[in-house]
Length: 259
Figure 1: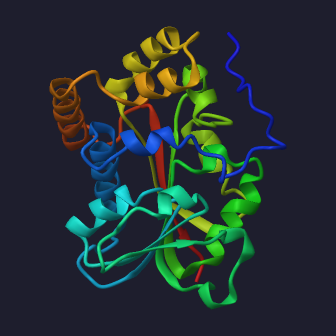
Figure 2: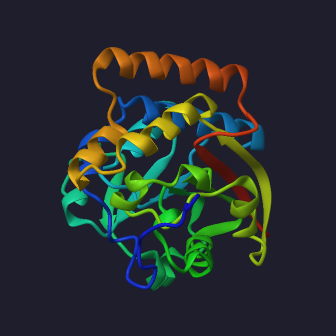
């Protein structure tokens, strides 16, 4: 079975994002809710306090959907950065802010500034992952944390991944390998979305010959609100009762930067 992406890694970048996703991946989307819940559970396990004040950076923030979720359960001051000007034009609550900023430029004023950096569903778009992670860690305070979420299971790679700009899907082992040459310690590494694996297989079959816009829509959006609620309910209980399953459609890791 061929699971290789049909994307030229030499021309891809974190700027190249299918903007059709922004209309779908809103905070009310079942997958967005489940991702936030998985992240919150992982933060609690690693001892990261969401109650204390902290400076937080969300890299590749899009329209700020995750920032809105963070504001519900944290006392953090959040900066979202992206290179997509359409996304950055979206209004955001006053306590947070969106900026056009490329972390690869390594602004000296942002060196070691943040208590926590999030890199959510960005790394799979990046050709030079080593350099990008190093740039992300440049912004993390010594002894503070970086959290990364990526799509999982290479066998699920499909036309959907291609049209949304994914270069790869990960396993726990391959994601851990991304940090092997960096001065960090893995605090927690887990799959989530076990119950979505059958849907991932079905999606691979269904979208195989679809045009880009339809493949994006079908791949991300439930057919109706009932299914959105049902999938959200299913994932909520899965995460609550089985927070670290043996497989899942996503891999989530939090690493701690050396002091």
